Image (tube, rainbow, N blue to C red):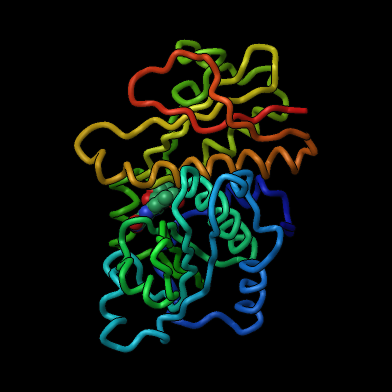
Length: 287
Ligand SMILES: Cc1cc2nc3c(=O)[nH]c(=O)nc-3n(C[C@H](O)[C@H](O)[C@H](O)COP(=O)(O)O)c2cc1C
């Protein structure tokens, strides 16, 4: 996937937009996005571990007026006329794979100057599944509106304030050295400091930031773990944490590639004691 500027700039620019000008995408822009959705470069490190995954643009006008009222996004999203909708066959890694690929698309769409907003919960799955002819074995993990961002409505500002959408957890709460007892210092990490910072800036459902990463001592080996949400609303966010992990791996992968650092993804769980509520996902090793 090619971008017009450094991926670090695009990751910093991306933010969730819930207020759009009520206009359709220009034909040439829509054509360009359709090409991106069909590109061979729409691949993730998890492809080999998952079934098929596909993406389509769906316009609100394609729904009959009765269905339009039931898309289920309208309290949350205003004005958007088009959505990218993805469907995936279920498998062990399908959510991580979907998270990686959808974020790749979202970053590309951000590069085109359009707004997006990951929607895992606030949309009507039944209606969107029908629209893209989901097969029995397919599910829609998430969708995103795409369009020209308009000034945020007060309702959107309230949502952002409630979930503290701009904030991210401090480095020492999410990145560790050797085991979960030792916070990782970002000194002497060179490019890896920016690579991890790009993970830290990623979007996540409810801004829960469930990614935890352990770096091995003196080796450029990074183990990715998911921390399941705790507390009152934990059950609301749990279905989305593997999507968040896909986003984290996407930011890591794209930034490492931009720095020309060679490495690969591995699926062997390391022998590191796990605190409660954490699960191993994947490892990245430099070559
Ligand atoms: C997997 C996933 C699911 C999300 N689901 C929703 C949703 O259903 N409704 C919504 O308004 N925002 C949703 N969001 C957006 C997050 O609230 C947002 O990314 C987070 O607050 C950080 O804000 P930012 O994207 O502006 O950086 C979701 C984000 C992710 C990554």
